[in-house]
Length: 90
Image 1 (spheres, rainbow, N blue to C red):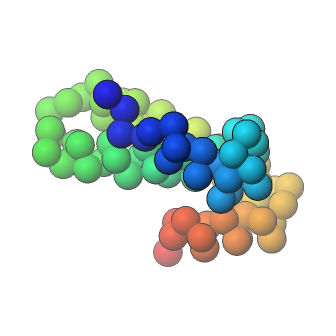
Image 2 (image 1 turned 45 degrees about the horizontal axis):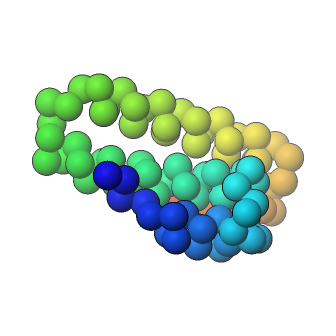
């Protein structure tokens, strides 16, 4: 019952990771987390009292923040390109 189909995941990994099988790249992981965060945020707007999902959302946001911090320290140009492409940190 996932909103992300295998094809959609593969296209995200191909776009951000270089190829569909490169699931471990930081860019691909951040893009996947961003997609999941957007979906869960929409769910929580309709289901305000779903506290366990809210906790999971906060964990995902924290994970994405840690990955972006790592990327900012180690690959500043890639970090800037990624946040521009994903529309983060306006």
